[in-house]
Length: 99
Ligand SMILES: [Zn+2]
Ligand SMILES: [Zn+2]
Image (tube, rainbow, N blue to C red; front, side, top):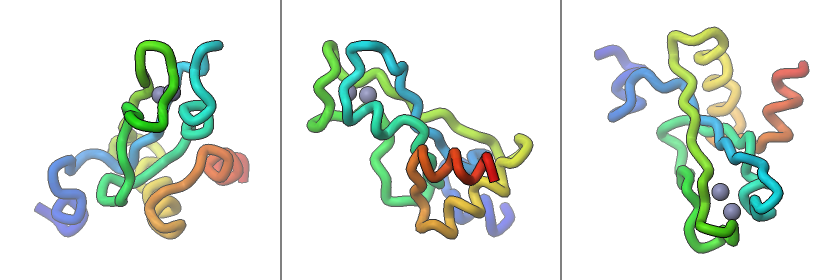
């Protein structure tokens, strides 16, 4: 196992995760706010579904979409997220992708 896999621990092939919410009309504000948030696997960040803060009818249906290390930009994105402290908001990621 290389240093990077060791660092990531349980999920050696994941570069980072992206919060994905359905953006339906009943999706609560907190879920919408989190949509697009990206974080690296070792970050101190709670993956979806949201529990206490979510007011979506039927509960949170958000998902964590993994981006693999072997996918285009996977490693570059993870490096950027790590430099920002491990968690980056959706808005910030949009700027990163645009830039
Ligand atoms: Zn919600
Ligand atoms: Zn949700």
